[in-house]
Length: 243
Ligand SMILES: Nc1ncnc2c1ncn2[C@@H]1O[C@H](COP(=O)(O)OP(=O)(O)OP(=O)(O)O)[C@@H](O)[C@H]1O
Ligand SMILES: Nc1ccn([C@@H]2O[C@H](COP(=O)(O)O)[C@@H](O)[C@H]2O)c(=O)n1
Ligand SMILES: [Mg+2]
Image (cartoon, rainbow, N blue to C red; front, top):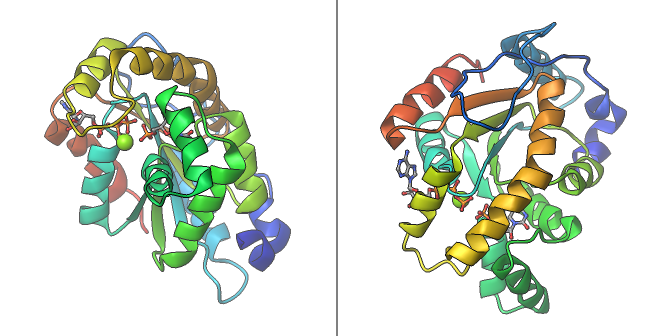
């Protein structure tokens, strides 16, 4: 949709390189540390690009990534309430589609039970509709993109890239503990599905984080600690962005 309004402008490559990020020292994600442009400058440039060229203003888009149970939803709720972002959770949009009783919902349920990834066109279409129905100028997209196919479909269908990617870095044993204690009746919060989700995360989601890291868009946050402590780091990041 933004492509229609903004044409090639929003897809113009922005040269950038990896950025340093707060390190938690966990086993995965050796995010590169050398960089040409700091994250803040990248964000400023993308804000300028977002608002150039006409009356329609592209919202500021932050993708929120992290393993299953790393605390994405918990932190997004805080960001939404303290910083005025709309919170769109890809998982929630898919679960809503299941609840609607549609044929697509049946397919989605089978995939979620297996911890696999739903075809990108379905997920991006749900995100597109949700973005269109919110007037928010700042949007968090939680749990997306989960794989390269998701990422490419977003660029193709929505016609833009995120301004910022937040990555919650959490050790596996902590994620498993949190998921098993969640008690929200989710069909995928059982140990068999959790193991599959963790494998999918490592093999398909980490490459997306690496991709955005190489474009200087990733801010990594140590997801160990209390939700309040983690939000301290999140607050610091969002307070440093002029939105
Ligand atoms: N810092 C924390 N310490 C302990 N428990 C936490 C913390 N943050 C969130 N939790 C709890 O862990 C569980 C998972 O958190 P949350 O739903 O936010 O994770 P998520 O990354 O969105 O997971 P998913 O990818 O499965 O949707 C919830 O029960 C939540 O209350
Ligand atoms: N981009 C996405 C996001 C989610 N899924 C599927 O939904 C499950 C639950 O997602 P949460 O973000 O709520 O953990 C996930 O395990 C996938 O099966 C997806 O396919 N694509
Ligand atoms: Mg979640």
